[in-house]
Image (cartoon, rainbow, N blue to C red; front, side, top):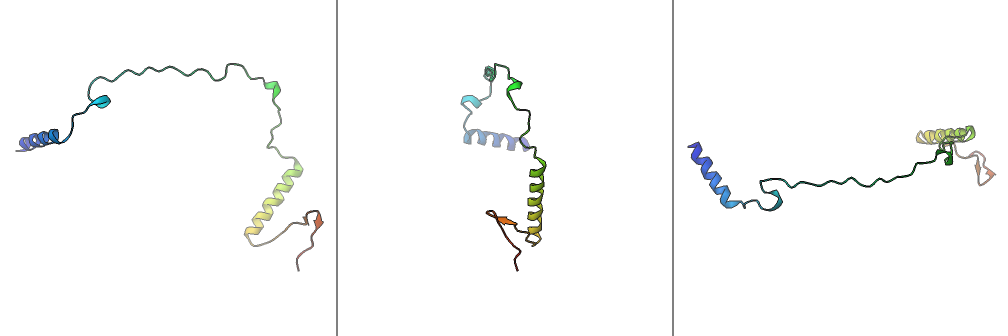
Length: 96
């Protein structure tokens, strides 16, 4: 009985589904020809023309100012306002 059911389903599926055509049909696969891309850089780079100083290295004064800014931002998350000491070159006093 199982064999008869399988044969009936196979016959019904052959009627309902189209036969595969085109590139996806069963058979041999077409051979793909691969050519490597041309080289992008053909000349050598000259290392003497570049600067040896890393632009992201901070001076001690820049490092101190960055640390102060980060501390002020951290304290602002806690609700403490440190505020700037000078605004546009004018010394600002403490708020009362």
